Structure formats: structure tokens, C-alpha cells
Amino acid sequence: MASKKGLYANIHAKRERIKAGSGEKMRKAGAEGAPTAKAFRQSAKTAKKRK
Image 1: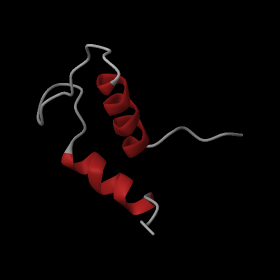
Image 2 (image 1 turned 45 degrees about the vertical axis):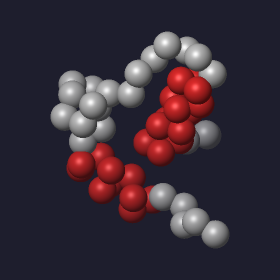
Image 3 (image 1 turned 45 degrees about the horizontal axis):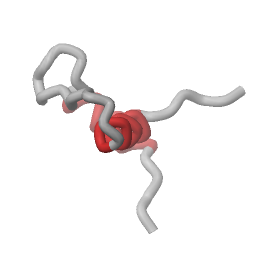
């Protein structure tokens, strides 16, 4: 069973789509639907360490 992609993977994918000219915009901090500080703290617990 494959697990869902994480917060950082979703952010990276959206940045790539924006770079390719999708016309999307990143949400501002505090905007509805934007990741909260709590979401970043939770995802940091399972984030892979940089090499």
C-alpha cells in the first residue's frame, strides 16, 4: 500500500508547476487552505534528512 506524498513533496511539486507556467500562485501564510505552523512541525518529524 503506497503512502500519500507529504507536505514538502506537495510544495515542491507546486513550485515546479508554477515554474513551468501553470498560472497557479502559492498561498500566503495564514490564508485559508495554506499549511499552518502546526502542519510544518508535524511534517518535520517525518522529513528525510539532507545528505
